[in-house]
Amino acid sequence: MDIKRNTRKRNILYALLQGGYWMQYGTALSFASVIMLNRGYTDSQIGVIIAFGNIPAIILQHALSHFADKSKKVSLAAILIVMYLLEAVAYAGELLTKHAGAMCTISIIMLTVIAASTQGFVNAMSHRLEMDEIKVNFGIGRSAGSFMFAIISLVIGHLAEKLNPDVIPTIGFAVCAYLIAVLVIISLSADTTSKAMEKTGTQAKESFFAFFSRYKLFFVVLLGCMGFYLSHSYINNFFYQVVVDVGGNKADLGGILSFAAVTEVLPMFFYSRLEKKFGTKLLLFVSGVFFLIKSLITLIAWNVAGVYVGTFFQMLSFSLFIPASVSFVAQLMNEEDAVRGQSLVTIMINIAFLIASFSGGFIMDNISVKAMVLVGTLTSVAGVTLLGIILRKFDLKKTA
Image 1 (cartoon, rainbow, N blue to C red):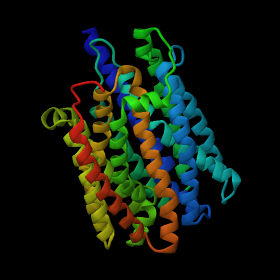
Image 2 (image 1 turned 180 degrees about the vertical axis):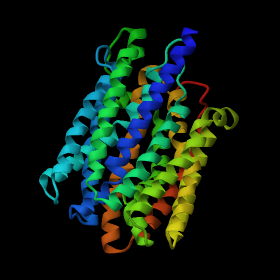
Image 3 (image 1 turned 120 degrees about the vertical axis):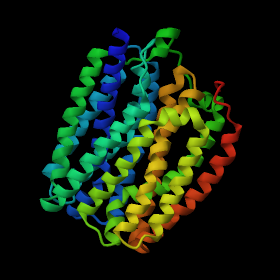
């Protein structure tokens, strides 16, 4: 009975954590263009600022993940608490500034860094909460994240349209308080320090090159994933501009983001069953194919309804990619490499966002929104092709 009760408790806590993460992601990144346009930034400036937020996110993610994998004393929950305290400060800075300037820019960069760099840690928390017979269902927890993202997107979209964009950092500040409260409860309920350290009793440092040598083909997989994730990044980084380009507004953006998140819930909730039936490699490849389809339909969309149709394919793209990538790493890598492996997936995502941010704003200012989406569609074709070839070389029943 204790095992069942503890399992249920940890799964609930993990679902609450995923819900909080995706709510803060929505306020920090999905609506970033809305508040930045309100503050007077151009599309190119928005792209550059978001890109500069992803550069330190990549560095921070790698450094902290290695530390989290090796540290006996500092828990993953403690690292996240510090990050979300800093994010609350950034939201306060964003709220206090009403025009484009140094303080506003720094606040937005901080929000981008934290939102982008903590995803891998939140994903890896599912493994840190497991012990002995207590198992955490990542798919169910992640589906809670999509559900909460749907709610927050709908709320922010309507309030930002009816009131003003200042509701975005206000809600973000409240979400940070929620996240910190959940992480404090997790800290009191479970030990989220590295399990690998408990088993090995060593803190031997390993260079990145040694890690790379052991998992060379994994980096090719990441390259393929980056190809189709670029299309997702082009659309998501500038979703407001995509929606306005077909005649929509802030409320339409909130509705589309909410709809996208709702489509993710069932595939993520039942992911473990899908994985047992079809396998991790196939689901990872299928997710790439549907990223391509989503980008193609968004490219040819002529009104808001068309964007909704493209967004429908979030159901089999993003909703499969996230749990499939987490499961792929878990099956491929040793325990002592788990957080670093998850962080590399997040780093790949950050690099995709970096490239899309720099180039997307430039393409929109100098050509058009459709040209930006076209570039993403072409990179998706290349990424899906590469992934289809390289995945055949993996046998996930064996460790690398």
